[in-house]
Length: 639
Image 1: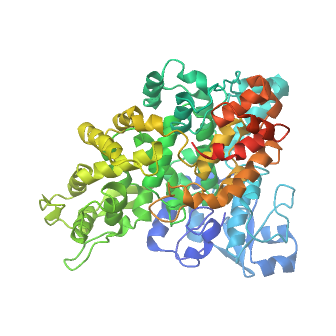
Image 2 (image 1 turned 180 degrees about the vertical axis):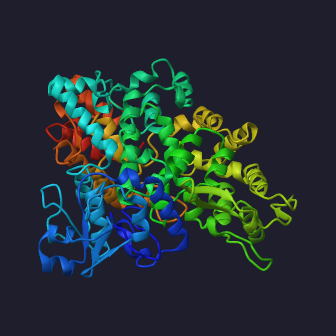
Image 3 (image 1 turned 60 degrees about the horizontal axis):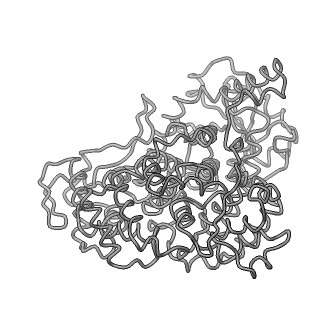
């Protein structure tokens, strides 16, 4: 944790945009809005940071000259919060006066040593000193930690906060009274405790409908998944379209154990954004691999690209989590209009598309058109949806005044609100529809109604659904059938999906869509029933394949067509070989047990290929690397 005297501004670990890889962005100056944000979080959450351990921050030259950690940490000073920089001891009297709680002189509370050190080292102006133990950096280390090391060290040594310390203390007490062997029976079960029933494989020479459904409507079949469709496809689909009714305790508990992503927006600013991204991607992978709500996960993947927000821009590094959990997921199987409305006022989207800077204060002011343009071009009407530059300008006027801010007294951080003083309240005309003057924040509601009810939007959304579930270039009659369902249902997503799956084109196009890297990696883990934590090593492999979640820089999201992904096939082959060879930490496959569950290697190959293997395939895929070869085969690259 770092405190710095800068006109009454406090900076601490994770409470500024300079945390992590982009430290220099706000260093050494701090913007006024950022100052309010920092103080709001600081005063509401600082007490929870006060934990165990000492941390001193020094200039690197000063550190090397003195050589010992504790000499810097015990300089006499009357203020408990201070730091050493450039050989001078500085303090924050104004801030320290609020927290005279008996903290030892020269000590600073620390929650996450590794993250804090990574932040300071990346700034090139600071060096964090502390106990030279195996869990913590020793004197002389420099440079930011790789993600794997930062994640590992953040959970070693000093506790993160009082809650985690008390939890650990409780587990130690329980272990002492019951014994370590019985301790596991008291812990909630996760995905690693799932049942592993016998596998079922297709017997036909061609891909059957059951395998086709599991390949398109889920992230690929697991060994036992064919049994799910025995009651019938309609019954299974009805269950998937109502994910809230699906009981999935193992996956839910595993996701709940990733505590950082479930924090309030204000608390997220106390975390290293790189660690937040790691946890968010980890949760995404775990859900895709193990969740019983598979159609929901497929739709979340679809809408995440449709309403793309790049993690790397500004405060999106902290707010992308709330965008995923509070915007995309709750509306992925709802009404399209509600999804558009939620994304339009998502804090992350307002930052990413500069909507928070869209203001008209004086008559001569021009609104920021970026958010409005993407709303029309990428989110609703489509690039050929019939809108003009004037429609973009009028839509931007409707969206002016929406921003996000911070309430200092109630520690409200990144709350979206409407500022009437920044809104153009005059009359507007969008796509030929007049919006009367004086509407205020209701202008946004009318704008969304206009664009979502437009015929071009129905076709644009229908084409995207057809490309995800039917073909890269769907026939016009398929698109029109789905668009008609959109118009008749008012944009109800489940009804549109029922239309999609009921079309003959859905049945006729089995195995014609190329798997993007995320789907390929997850389908491998599902097909082999692998145990994975979705951690840094898996994410590194996914990055090499070219599709790290939440990191596509432009608003159009990762491409759906096959051609952009052909260049990463080598990384896919390496992944399948390394996974079965046990060379990927954080992901293991029990190859012999997998063969035993299917009864034979031939049946296992049929499960992976979606059909009975040919004699040539059996000859080539026999042996120790047979499963890896099947996972790297052309047949497994398509779904």
